[in-house]
Length: 430
Ligand code: S3P
Image (cartoon, rainbow, N blue to C red):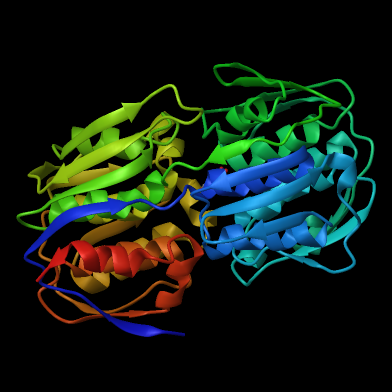
């Protein structure tokens, strides 16, 4: 467990940052490359621990994957090229890896066992194991398939109609991976629109999917062709600097190469609503995933309400949005965000607890939180609780603290942003 002093009392943030590759898209590029025929070359791949877990799992399934500084090369041999693993598949901290892989393995006629770290052991898996079982996979897991370890024996699946009980791109994607191997059509109904990287990537790899608002239809027995993927920067990583730029005095920073897929840009909508000075430039809308640069400046902020269909569009950004709200005049209410309770940590609890330590006025509710601004953050000893996004949010909070801040469990940050501290150091002027 690493305990590190964080930089406090920052005078300004200046300069630009090349935002590292998107985590969701990096995972999917490995998965599609692994089930396609031929070579897939991925550039700007995120070499965070979560995506490396995905690579390790596919290597155990017999897929040849080479990683160097510039690119990842996957030699796919189609879905039938995946082999029964002789070892347990360890997903580490990655919910995306385990849930999406279960969808792939559901259609493969062999046996696998999946495990992860302590956090994964507490995260609900029934949301994927139940519908995949309905499609025909044989799945066993601790507490009736609720938790890891999970074992799965895949086989012939049948397409079905499924209404997602929660707005989850991970569940939707698992069912798409199963559906593309099934007999017949699988139709998925989403309660709110969630990130659509899987749908976009199916087309990129030569497959077919039909999307009509929140209804997604996929036909079975599909095959895919290897391709080249350039991963855009992760807006969920950019989020920490978006908030930092808005709350640290005298700041102006440019975040380069940020993915601007509309299913992910809820944070930009909320920041604008709160009065933040954010501007998008060099936007390329016609790329397979839209991308652009974002300029953010120190801003005068006001409270807001964040709820409903907006929640899935910014679910991973809510911890750092809570920090932003501590610097806004008036009350900010976050509701309909009960999914926060089943992320890497219970993010309602961890955000409220850690920001309270720093001096924020924030209270937990059943489905979100209420933040009263504007407050001066002071300092103290805080803890990531092993959650990368909590760790980075706290490092951004420290920038405006007047007293010493120590972050415990700082190593968690490497899950999604190994170069976070060096990027933060580059723009920090004390
Ligand atoms: C992800 C979807 C989201 C998000 C996670 C990555 C994905 O989870 O929180 O970090 O890559 O599909 P849910 O879809 O379960 O909300």
